[in-house]
Image (cartoon, rainbow, N blue to C red; front, side, top):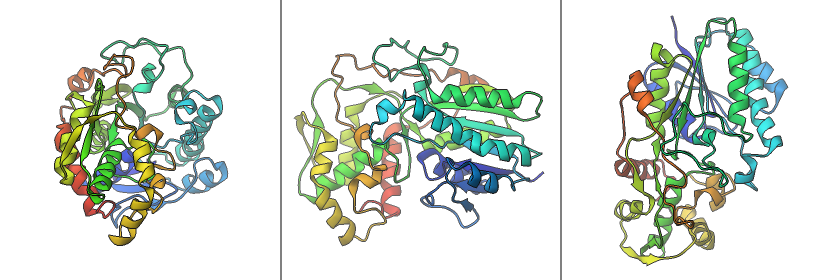
Length: 363
């Protein structure tokens, strides 16, 4: 049987990686996003549709009768207040409606639908809420925290739609996603690479942030895409939720020597600073760089991050003295189910340094 996958959120970090992975593996791929994804293969069909537009979704997805798989990685962030948007009832309903708008016509048309994957994250455990004490590591068996979250709206909707149907679902919960995309407001690896490129252009060194470094995990979008391909057909992935990460744990500030190596500039002495404000202060330099090097990137530096850089700050110390505040996840369940691949985080940074230069997004 022909395998055809719809990837919603194809211009994002995970969606773009999934489009590239599935196309390379010979699947027929439909990439769904308002903006055309970065680095899309000629064989991939791109459908530009706003998932908030119910009528447009009905027209676009109501004709996709031969789709066998869906990967849903689309998300709408409240760019003026991303953190607050995660608990905002209006924003939660918006994200819930986006999935419904896509899935209602698609599930009615696609009679051979076999599998649906949702890409969520560790916010399902409430790790973003300062009032909650989250266990370390966070496990899939934890009960839902007593807080609103569009993840739960989407899960409940999908599980309800599955009753009496022949298709299955999988939920992946990555942490700290890194990949290739523009317009993503939580693209911390791009922020690090951009900051290094700006400092090099200005003839400056790369300062290491001062203070207690947060300890965290990162997940390579290419690794997530590989897991999505596994989940699409693995019996052990049916109707299961899995955490996923690279497999190593790093002190966030230890990324700075790697960035200095990748960009080719000296490492500076530790000092306290706000990376987002420093990048904003070099907005004019970035505009000049885009023109001088003829980059495939917006001249407005904030547009690289969808208009908001607040959640990409990589210089923030653990102000409460707890380097594990954001928590770590257990990936034991995923490994026991049969997915064993991993990624060295420092090698991942080097890889994306190369990829962003190859795509002319960075000089």
